[in-house]
Length: 216
Image (cartoon, rainbow, N blue to C red; front, side, top):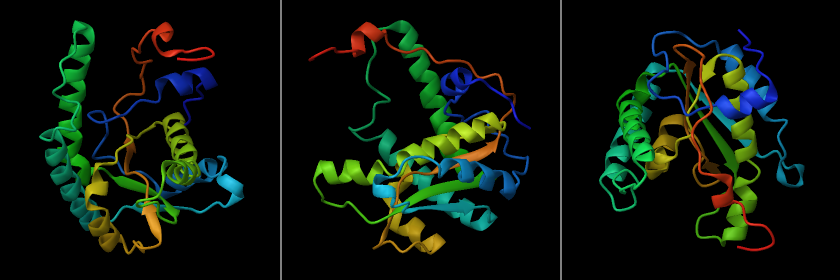
């Protein structure tokens, strides 16, 4: 089912979906493939097209990856790096953040039950390389990953950009046979039909607070 969203609607309503993922409804592999076909039209540095898309439908593998994600989430939630406990002075943003934390915990508890997990990967690794090299490499994958999510949204599917599984990247590579030394995993996204398709634009900071013209 195509939602036939306008470009503006697509860009402003493609949300991180967690609690509204339908864990019971099967997602056709052909539909995931259709989204990837659109995703690989994204720009890629020097036209290398070094991306790979690992689509995980096997129940045991999904469960194993979901458990690793749950463990990583618990480590992150209780670490100093977590933004979950940072106090917010704006009451509305504080309430929004509470909902985000709750939904993130839900996804961590249910990641292994999502019908399809997709892990976009890229040939090469950037471990310990300078920031320009890292930005160059990921710049050849992340636009395609976002295009995948946009295509999924327009087809009634929900996704969520997550990276916590990378705490266990080697273990996930072993589960899926990804050549760890030569291929880097960029993210992990659950893919499922959504319970309802009525997503709305999210509240964001005032543009005057984030736009800097001709200098900071």
